[in-house]
Image (tube, rainbow over all chains, first blue to last red; front, side, top):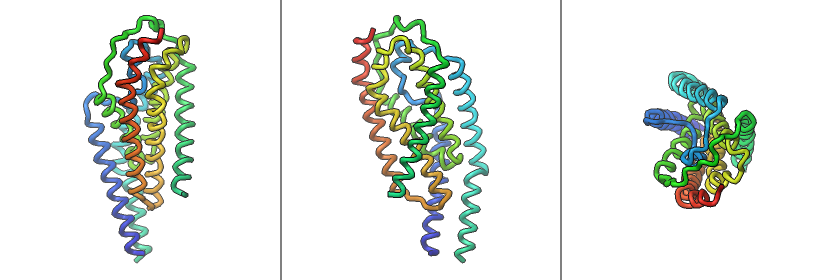
Length: 93
Length: 165
């Protein structure tokens, strides 16, 4: 039981740390935009004219995503998971 | 079996969110007036497309565990709006969908898969039932799918631009 818990603890910490590193690395890339290149060719062909709704939502969405990431790196989910791990360890002991 | 069921449910949830965003943008977008002035000399760059898509797919997967999936949902909805806007722009000339469908038919399901894997990772983390092998398997599928989509977008889709009017 203890061994299983220990394995899951290390996996949880690994997942959180790896996710944090990857996301920070991705956000540090220059010319970062959050959309996939599905409509890349339409863009290059000069067809796309962004509507007000897309401009508004993408701007809000990008800001929200960045704020959420930075906020959660400080506390948020990592802290919740660590608390859960501590409680599970205490219960196992 | 249980894990796959959860992933399928999350995939359907992602699909619904994506379609809501897509149709909202579609209905609120006016057709673009410059559809007839196409730039037909397009040379897509495989590595640029592939790495941008990998970056977005990675954000979809790894923002999940860090943000209780809120970041994943935000990126998914943004992509739905952008695709909906593009289709809205060409709603009076749907032939131009030929410039989206050949690679989009792989790229969009992979985008939804990445979002559902991100949500599944969050769920696993909260339940302390992490299966890294399962996650890495799906990350491999996403990587492969995006590579095929980028190849199609680079080598196949530009052929269609000569045919659309």
